[in-house]
Image 1: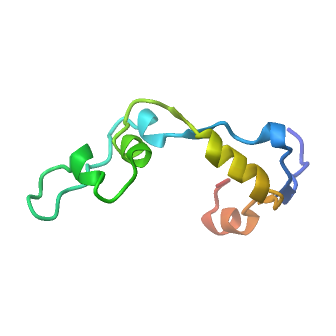
Image 2 (image 1 turned 180 degrees about the horizontal axis):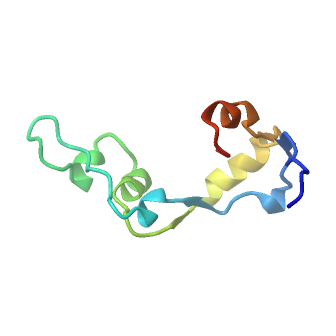
Image 3 (image 1 turned 120 degrees about the vertical axis):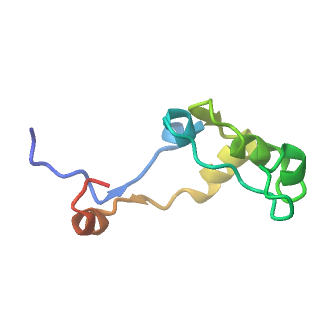
Length: 101
């Protein structure tokens, strides 16, 4: 195993930009508790959530099965405009957690 550290800052080319978000819930054996309606204390429905969130976010919030959720093209284009800043690795956080976060 190499002792070479991953660079502190990583710059992505446009072609390396992510095409999908990772949905952690798809891989969880025990799914998180659903959001509850504060009035009824029942799990919130898509219709109730759509009063607050757009349709795409509601679908993501209720998706427990798909490991990858495609990033809409409009968002990917926005990332291209505003992603010249590097990804910065959290070595200090890893050190404090005693874990490769």
